[in-house]
Length: 208
Image 1 (cartoon, rainbow, N blue to C red):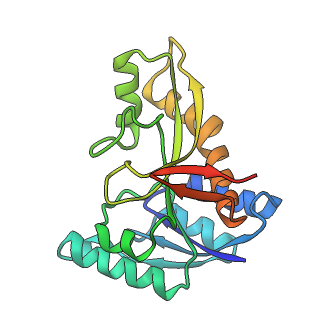
Image 2: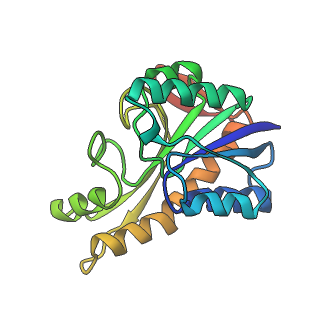
Image 3: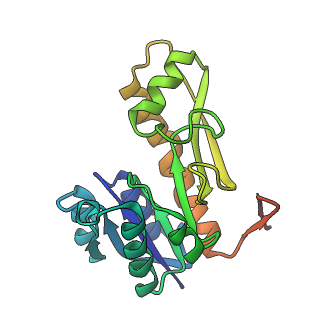
């Protein structure tokens, strides 16, 4: 049984999708053992507590710079005997100290089809605003391993979502979450916990 630590910064809808997948048996060989928030008082912490999951707050504002915060986060992750780290709406930048501590053992869900609309500055509603500005007909979500390059790690799963003519950034964000993020993030976690993911030459292969 693999220990999963989930990093959060907000409401925790992706965390809820993971909790639901764990409870329904989609994630069979892993268990969320700790949720770490980058600020106090976020609703994701309540979601964790409602399911008797340990919580920790590592507030970004308590640290002088990215390096000291990243060191504290890497230490916290290792203290939890973590097998997999999942970014679930985690909005704080970490440096290579964390990646080096958990190579190919950290994953993130991004609300676009990487390499479109990704990288520094592309987060939250901004991603969907840009997609609508470009007039794309299809967008979606990507789950990828985390590396020191923002949104640049090996892609695990992707799912496409149709863009409607009358979409706003808010309606598109909601549809991408419901149709893509909440489905492929639990799937990717389950595959990892089942030892079915292999990274070769920056590509992810799913074993049968």
